[in-house]
Structures are given as C-alpha cells and as structure tokens.
Image 1 (cartoon, rainbow, N blue to C red):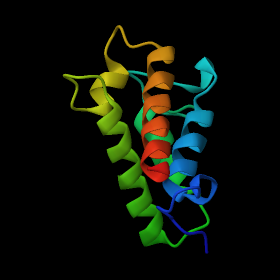
Image 2 (cartoon, one colour):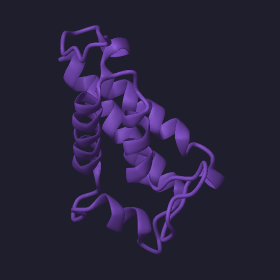
Image 3 (cartoon, rainbow, N blue to C red):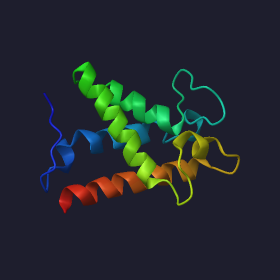
Image 4 (cartoon, rainbow, N blue to C red):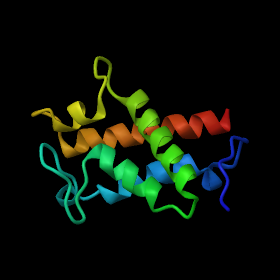
Length: 117
C-alpha cells in the first residue's frame, strides 16, 4: 500500500503531493476545467479535480476519503487572501483557468516545502 510520508526527500511517494499533482493534470487543459457548471465527463472544477484524483488512488475507501479532505484543505490554504471557499473562487466571474492552475501550483509548492523542511 502506498504511504503518506513526511520525511524529507520523500516527495515522490507522498500521497497528498501526488494527488495535488494528478488533480492539476486533470484540469491542465482549459477545456477540462469548468466553472459555474456541474462537472461532466472529463471536465472538473478545481475542487472536483482534487476529489476525483484522490478517489481513484489505489487506497482503501476510508483512506481515499481522508486523502480527498486533506487535498481540499491544502487547496483551501493556497487560496488568495480574502477567499474562504474553493467553489466560490473557482466560480467567480473573473477567475481564469490560469488562476486555478496557479492555485494548484501554490498548494503543490507548499506541500513540497513542508516535506523538505
């Protein structure tokens, strides 16, 4: 079973980091990201991309649910100052695809920093 390590240098085996990276990859192309609409086949909002990436991991159901929650929490922490919700930020009229990718980039960088001390 994969493990979620917090030891320095273990960034490639950290489930949370890998889930953030995989979620970002799901919406890397603008046509795979949605806002203000329900996610569809192959399209995701920022939050659903995180949830989908966590739920498709090869982990037990309870672990996947916990991983999804942790992934969303790291995204929440990476929101710009003044924003408290991923859905609200994703769906605001002036949020761009680049803004959402930058949100993921901040969360990924913070997780790498946490792992590497």
